[in-house]
Image (cartoon, rainbow, N blue to C red; front, top):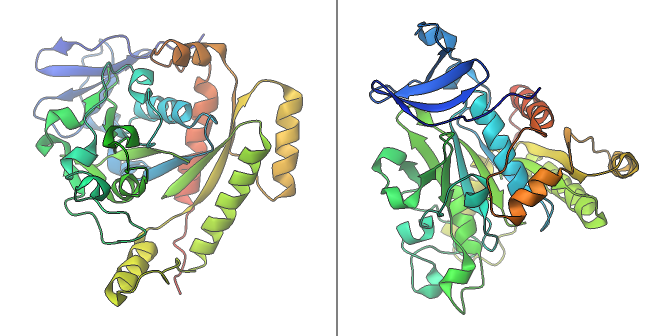
Length: 343
C-alpha cells in the first residue's frame, strides 16, 4: 500500500505543519531556521532526527529539467519536487518555460505568482531592463533572492511547502517580444534562498546546472538527449561558448567567466510516458547504441493524464517508487561529481 502524502496544513501551538506522511511529520517553527522531523505522537523533539540541509547531497543545487515539448518536463518537475520535499529537502521550482502554462495547477496552487520578469523591470524588447544573454551576458543584477524579503505576489507555496516562482511568459509581453532570451537570463542567474541557505531549485525549461533530460517515446526526444549529452561533454572539456558576435571585449570576458563558473555537471536521462515493455526495450536499445544509460523510467499513468486534463494537482502515489529511484540516482551522481578543468 502506498503512503498517503500531504494530509493537511494546520497549526499546532506555534508550529505550522508543512507536510505529513506515513507515521512521520515535518514542521517548521515560526522562529526556527531548521526544520525538524519526529514520529507523530512521540513527543520527541530533537534536531538530530532530521537530516539537515547541509548533510544532503543535493541541498542548494540547481537542477534543470529539459526535453522537447510534450515530453513531460512539468510532470517530472512536480513529481521530483514532491518526493524531494518528502525526503527532507527545501524545494523551490522556477517555471522558466516561456510558453507553457498550468504548472501551478499541477502543484495544487490556484493562481500562478506574478512573473519575476516584472520584479526585474521587464523585457528589454518591451522597454524593460532584462536583456538577452546572447547579446548581453552581463549577470542579472539582484539575482540572489531571499524569500522573506521578496514581495509575496512573486511566489506561492503549496500545501507541501514547495515554493513556486515564474520567470516569465512571452504571451503577456505582447507583439515583438517573441524572444525568450530575457526569461533564460532570469533562469540562468536566479538563486533562491531562505534564512537557512539556498533552496534546492528545479528549473522547468522550455526546451543548466545538472541537467535531467526527459525522453518520451519519440525519435526527436532520443536525438535531443544525445545532443544534450554531447553539448555538456564539450562544456565539461572546457570548450568556450561562441562569442564572435560580441564586439565589446569586456562582454566576451564576462561570457567566458559565466560559462566557466556555471559548473554544469552532466546530463542524466529519464524515460517518461512508457506504456509498454516493447517501447521501453526499444528506447533503451536506441540510447544504448549512443552510449546513454537512463537513470530511471516513469511509466504512463492515466491519473497523471487526467490531472493535467482537469487542471488538478498531480499525485505521486502510482509513480512514487519510480521517482524515489530517480532521486537516489541524482544524489549518487552529485556525490561522485568531480569539477572539470577549464581551458
